[in-house]
Image 1: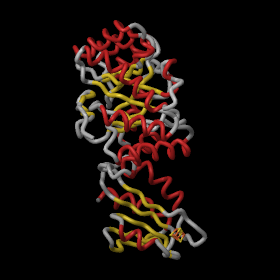
Image 2 (image 1 turned 180 degrees about the vertical axis):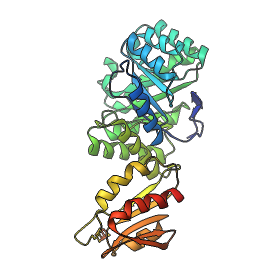
Image 3 (image 1 turned 135 degrees about the vertical axis):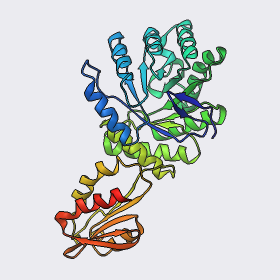
Image 4 (image 1 turned 30 degrees about the vertical axis):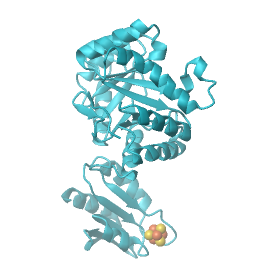
Length: 345
Ligand code: SF4
């Protein structure tokens, strides 16, 4: 569904722009910013478009402003309760603000934030979360509708001030509630939507829940940015987000990986090969398919269909490129040979 376009730094969101994957920084910022900058570069490499940071106080706002001047990615300030922190971040040049107007307090405070954002064209994300709905909406039988009602209440201040550079998110920890709330919102409003299942859980259940919810929405054309909220690393959140886009047919310039689960027939240790190769693959901006297979049952077939494939074949390891056998190598040489061919693609 076509939504309004907003810009986070130079990055377009909505209006038909590719769906952007984001993540959230998991620790408080300290004066030692270099390791954060290094990690932001790694996040960019695996396909992260921008990163959100919690800003609980003035010191955190100052550190984020300093970080934003050296960051390889646009940054978002996540602010609750204190509107002055939002003003500080907007004036300090932060690329986007996320607020929950419901906990900012008096309407004039929200309006001050909106006016400051309008002066500098900083977009604001308004986050509605099923766990922090206003008291009177918590008893509603249909929580998805209650979430849309909460979003509508927040929208009012922006519409009164004619500020359109806004993104909404409607998140629940339950798949159906999240999907339904976003569907209802997208039917009525043209604002870009940030997708997420909130507090989705540890890696495996979190990936499953987020994938099911987001693919359902993305396939209907709903969603302009997404974050997979995991009790795991930001890098894994971004890799999962990219995989979800790939599963929904929206992957851009990222390798698709086919690898065999391995069984008693395997003559090649695909698990350790994939584990070693994954960090290389996730850093590549190439629209290719690679196959890593354990034996001749399915190996040659899958490897031939991939742009680059490798399979165990008895005592040999065979590399395939574009459907043809390229070379045979020993297991100890396989990784180096594969990466060498990968770079040539
Ligand atoms: S390709 Fe071979 S090793 Fe891999 S799962 Fe199939 S039969 Fe087992």
